[in-house]
Length: 233
Ligand code: ADP
Image (cartoon, rainbow, N blue to C red; front, side):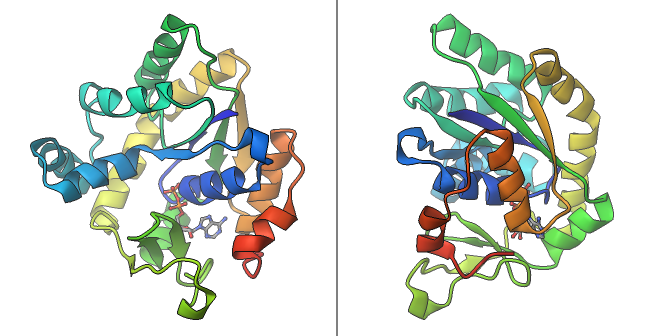
């Protein structure tokens, strides 16, 4: 499956892309590709590209297409299926992805899941009120809504860190950027019959169920429970 998760910051794109990937049956397994993680990896590696991208990111500005596309598209070419986390972020990125895949004669996206519902205020609160990202696995947690595993569970060694751009200023910048682009981006996929809007204001597990339902995939609690059964919210 080739799914893109779009929506404002804090809506749950990373959370759901990970959970959906983990819930799919093996033959449909599709890894998550996060544009944000690719940017962060470059920043941490201290490359010149990373420094340039980090500047945009921490100001809450979008990394320009000419920088992000060459980083992401080649990785997708090597993968039969994928869960795109926060990509495409604009209609022009959506067009570039379509063209890249059509030009190679490989399948385009199977579905685009747009997570929306919470107000901007709620989204900011979600992010500032406890988002933590595991340095070891890149997995996203929340101190209250989705707590990181305890050490004895041996699921994720962490450490569980706040991202440098999890500030009110940067989050508001990301929100504004999303609102500027959302209609055109959603319109691109609506025209192609690929868009599913899912209410992201519900508890995390309910949102996962709604997405799997929209993808025509029954939830597979036996897979899911193996890793994170205690987290059913
Ligand atoms: P995005 O990738 O869209 O920016 P995240 O997946 O990072 O969003 O989620 C933002 C924060 O909100 C994380 O700390 C996550 O654990 C938490 N979260 C995600 N979905 C929900 C939800 N449905 N209800 C409450 N908290 C959520």
